[in-house]
Length: 163
Image 1 (tube, one colour):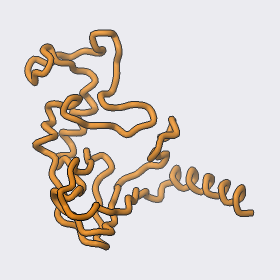
Image 2: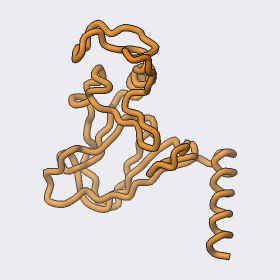
Image 3: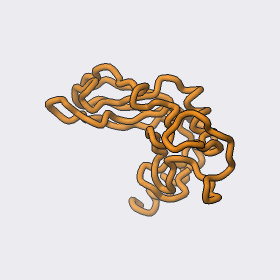
């Protein structure tokens, strides 16, 4: 839900996300990267707030804990109004620097779909000759809640701005 009016916030149920390629780009050219194992990685980041390391920087000896050393409970990498950030500091067991895989080369007009729950991002470096250019397209199914929410919002905007 878009409770914080953040950029890219979404208040509809999304099943898939997609890119429509406007330029040719592929591995090492700023393309999409995804974590290939959806179910275990989702379980890991959902349970991550309940565990903390016993030694800083170590993957061994983590223990169950309902709070950090200061008594705070938080979802690592989540800040109000922003997207969930998955990085090696917050989620070391996922080995993100080693396990994120780039999509193959995308040509202009190609569309790539992925589950909205998949850990994904873009490559941090583009060594290609041009910028990777895409349309980002969230895909939403026709559900009762999506239809009511979206149609009422669109109707109100149309009446307020065009009638």
